[in-house]
Length: 418
Image 1 (tube, helix red, strand yellow):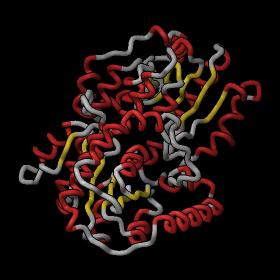
Image 2 (cartoon, rainbow, N blue to C red; image 1 turned 90 degrees about the vertical axis):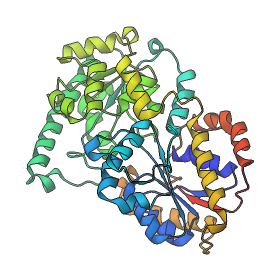
Image 3 (cartoon, rainbow, N blue to C red; image 1 turned 180 degrees about the vertical axis):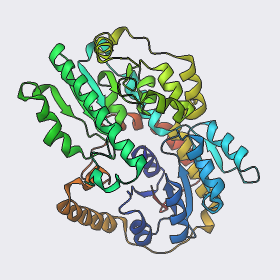
Image 4 (cartoon, rainbow, N blue to C red; image 1 turned 120 degrees about the horizontal axis):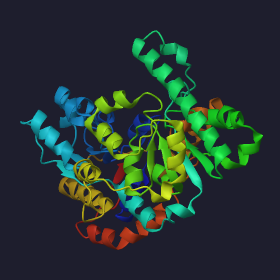
């Protein structure tokens, strides 16, 4: 999503730099951008403290948050974090509804519903995808950071806390169930298996331990996916076998059958009461009671019905779809107008040239990778992470309309950290 927005900003004349957790504050201090586009409430407040004169834009990265943990609930308890934002770009109307209800005296004029640029990329993929029947790969989504942490933290560190103990036990049982499902798919069908680890997992563990555990005779039918965009992976799958996950939204929009294993792993009741969106996912997906049923669903994937009215309504409320106009254009237009409105007031501090900033960042990242190869599991760098292959084609479809946005006012030499 950030890369697609970055390409658009560059066409509008902006200098840009995509940050990650490890270099966000350093980039702001060294480069001193005029605009900071952030995706977490905490980093928005950090940006305001480091660069008081910069414009701070919140571009929602997920869209799905249970109300007890939603952005509106956080802002209600931490008003300065809301006040630090100059512009809020939300996926769907649900966030605006929550802000108006929980923060009735707050300024909501800075909140705009623009859906998400990720859905522009997803729509391009969907239009060019092969039919389900022509695909031979079964996608397995895992979620085991408590027993396979991306930084190598052992499970024992948090087992003295009861909730961590429960989570670890559930992860062990769920992993064993998914391993059994994979084994049976390999033995009883001709399908290949592609495993997609959770972003907080250590990918190397799957290559080192998981693939060998199925035996050498199946190694050519097993792969681990570590691509940046999950949609690019989903569109290649015949079906997904997964616990409850936001990936169901992408699968639904891409017309890929979603087989939820929560009943098999005894997590159904927990996720059904966790949040209303989770309950709707469970009610809309295929949720087999046994591994035998799961295998049959995998075999019958091309014939499984996908569309559900409750999901169409949910996607309208939470994702702002259909939005009529590509989300990327709405995001770019909103950011560009904000800069135009505040152009004469933007701070003019001198920072490092962008080329030098990138060179230094690459050197520091390389040093971190030499210390720990797991660093790239969670921290982005342009040299270590390949952008989705569909992103250029998606951007080309939008270029003509992006040029029209540029007519609002010039933005040459303005910098933005995303």
